Length: 114
Picture 1 (cartoon, rainbow, N blue to C red):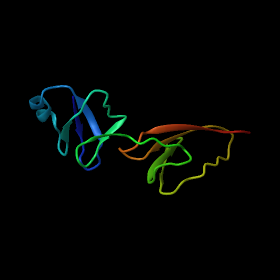
Picture 2 (cartoon, rainbow, N blue to C red; picture 1 turned 90 degrees about the vertical axis):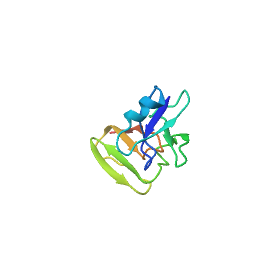
Picture 3 (tube, rainbow, N blue to C red; picture 1 turned 135 degrees about the vertical axis):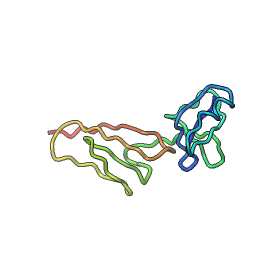
Picture 4 (cartoon, rainbow, N blue to C red; picture 1 turned 180 degrees about the vertical axis):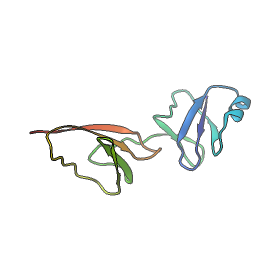
């Protein structure tokens, strides 16, 4: 199994289970290929500067990796310091966090009582 990835970020763009000759022909501009073992997935892994597979980092809403991008109700906010979440209206709010290819993309739900 090969992971095709962007060496500038380590983001795995897709997985290919084929001989190296086929994989080489599938590379798009800027991509490299790294042989990976079973269990590697683009959603849960990334490739470091030495072309080694690494698990994406996990985190909690109270300790976000910075910088990151936070999306709430289809609006994305750049985040460079730990935010405090306050909402004017009662309801349930879905918070999506993208901290780059080295971290898991996660969703959190916050209840704002009436």
